[in-house]
Length: 280
Ligand code: NAP
Image (cartoon, rainbow, N blue to C red):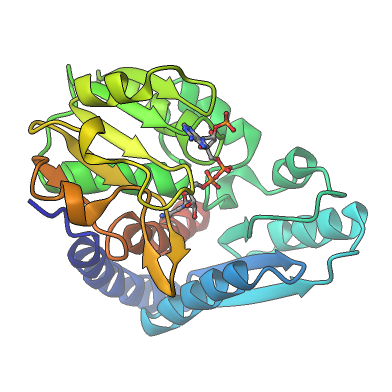
């Protein structure tokens, strides 16, 4: 069975469209997201533009702040603080990656936690550890949202997450624990990965290695959520070898059309959620 992220994204989009119209009618202002791009990463530019386009199609507003790669840390933080203080700004996010010369944690800490749309402010990551899911990173949220949409029971399941970053693996671990899963977190130093994946009920892979998850690493009961987005011979593919495992496993997300489609729309959804909370 294919877990169709694109269809879920459309469903979320239509609900946002109604709610955003209602917000505009009630408050006379549009919910608005500001993204900050530092440097010339082409993929980040595409992601940022795609979010703004989606916002504008959905009765919302958005703006990209393009900064050069040699912008100082002080200037980045000063921009974030000025956006944080504006009443017409409800969502702020910094597109990753940022230049290595900048202190990622200091920059993310300067986003008003209530305007943080990608849950990357360390305060919000801390709240997530305590079970509060008000501001959660969008990619792990997309993983859980897809599983919930297809009524996959998470409670009591053995989940294997291949990624240990603060953007995907660590927050996803918390979301899974909050839903009573038993979680194994794997990474580049994990031994016998294929035994762990094969034994798991749910496998979430986000390693950035095209077609890595092969037939010998999955079983008939596996539910595979593929977060990877890779370019291979001019095609976008995931971290799972979709063509060769889709017929073996019980459920799988495609790439493209899986997690990525849902991630973008959840950022938009969070912008509106923030706007509603902030205007009260
Ligand atoms: P990253 O920061 O490089 O992290 C990769 C993770 O995978 C690390 O934890 C790394 O382990 C682990 N890893 C790498 N090679 C491995 C191997 N051979 N076996 C087991 N674990 C391995 O990458 P990222 O930014 O998280 O992105 C990962 C992929 O997800 C990319 O394809 C990216 O495009 C995609 N992505 C998609 C979305 C979305 O919304 N769909 C969002 C974010 C990222 P160590 O910690 O030991 O290095």
